Image (cartoon, rainbow, N blue to C red):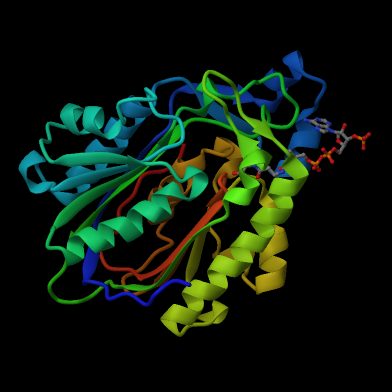
Length: 323
Ligand code: UT7
């Protein structure tokens, strides 16, 4: 059970995102596998995914934008947290290289919680702010093309590359708190989505689908309970996006409205830990978030892991269009 947690007042001082220029459309995939654009769109909601660039390159660009929007220089950032399931190397982590590229000399580490990673990172950042840090760069970034077989009919249609970033900043006025959060995992489901060393992703798509819908319901209920809120109180939901039908199935059970949901996967596919921060920057770009709004992030993915955070928005209102 998740303990209730104090939260410092904080702002999202700046956000950013980056997609590599290479695009793999459904028609491109149909050259190498038995599929069609209409099947992929109907069964997943995905039209294209981006490929190319490394996790560190994409992270650096998203982080640079977030620092610029926040008006912060290298000396201001006290920690880099990089959520990724496709690091540049097995060892070392990718965060130190990103910190170096951004001119930072603070602590830097990776979080590996698959598609839930950026939301895990946000909760960790809140903990570090309780320990006195002021500005923390939380990035979600993936180069999933390195571990995806684009001739496989299950995984090949889903995954793409990208990065999103946010700087969370301690705000002594007390505005912009984390109102509720939940982190969870069940290692009994390792076998339904995994990649062995030197190999590509393997997936039991139907079981991942089923477990994802259960995890979303469970983590949403836990965060809402901690916050003392209901579904109707949430102004915008930013869920992880693997397949639009997973979100629709969970929303039907929870009562969330697709109109209050930030969806980007049609143009990006599943970018794992990067999806939520890319969609956050995109939502700000589109003016979908106002000061004081209750914004909920919901992650779920391999592990299995799941995570959710509800924040009262406080911070920068500019953003980056996802594509
Ligand atoms: O971050 C978490 C990441 N992963 C996920 O969230 C994955 C969740 N699962 C899924 O998204 C879905 O299971 C898939 C999209 C991977 C597959 O969709 P499905 O509706 O579960 O398809 P299925 O495997 O049940 O196959 C249904 C039919 C079969 O044909 P028949 O036997 O009904 O004639 C398949 O052969 O669709 C066929 N099929 C395809 N046809 C065209 C399966 N894959 C494809 C394909 N293109 N890519």
